[in-house]
Image (cartoon, rainbow, N blue to C red; front, side, top):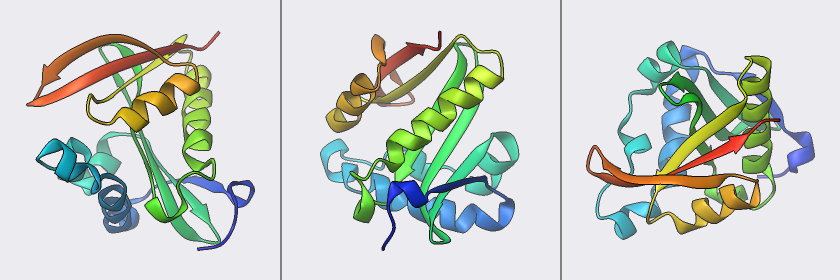
Length: 155
């Protein structure tokens, strides 16, 4: 898969994308199954429903889907629900660009901060979000998953 993150196009997902979104999320999160002893929660979602209920964006390089971003509004405010990048091209800045896109969407929507959670066993994700300026504010078990919560002010 060629291209660099500078060739990245981010567009809104439509229902015709649901199968490819599910495949991208699955490939991104599959490496964590063994560590967690079960599939990560993003792998269990119906992406037709997700596309109906949430803003979902696709990252494409050379018209190929390489990443997925799912956003939402919840009790804690603007939320970055899922960032998934094809494992074959991780490390090229695509995840960072998706997070920056999410932050811009939050700002445009009037949010003063953005939050997210990741599994406690996904230490790589925790380090990634910390490098991008997110700070831990909670840890709790939800839906049988040990989750670490992060927030970033958007000032």
